[in-house]
Image (cartoon, rainbow, N blue to C red; front, side, top):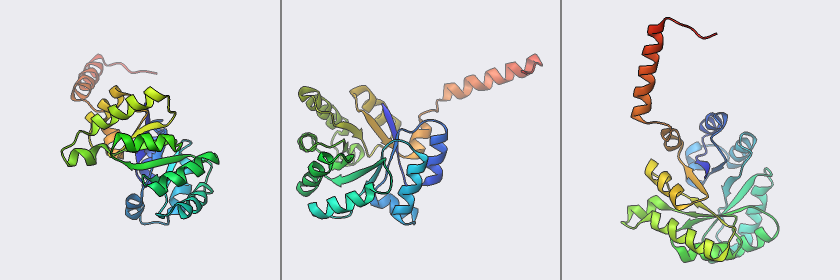
Length: 217
């Protein structure tokens, strides 16, 4: 499974990239607002840090304007992935942009049939929102499983990018189902390394090593 981080915080991205944990980055208008900097500056800086896809979202709602904005964003760096909403206009723009060789992430997916349409439109990534479905008492992981089965049935190349991830269990379950990518907040990604037995074991090892009176090197 690939790990993307869902943030526009350049410092967080740099820290995770230095640990070798990042395969890409996803941003959205809400994250850009939180960063409180010009979008183009943020995307350009992130693309210098991360070699993998960096999703930058259009603001337009009409297909031709989405295409224009998407091409502008893609001009920032070679690894920009144009993020489009899962609407009919978004699918039209996706089809044209992917046919021209651009990377496209179709976002705000909440049903398996939406994901099927995005794959038929040539999407590079589909972003089903797990947490937001859970918020309305639907099973977000069931959606990931349904999309996986449909894509496998028909041999679609579109990668399932599990989004709106809230917990470490979301990551585990998405990996078990076979999602290609998980995009997670920085705190969640860092939290994946933690386990109380790891901490306890390390504490014991360090105490025993100190008791030997030895040093290394």
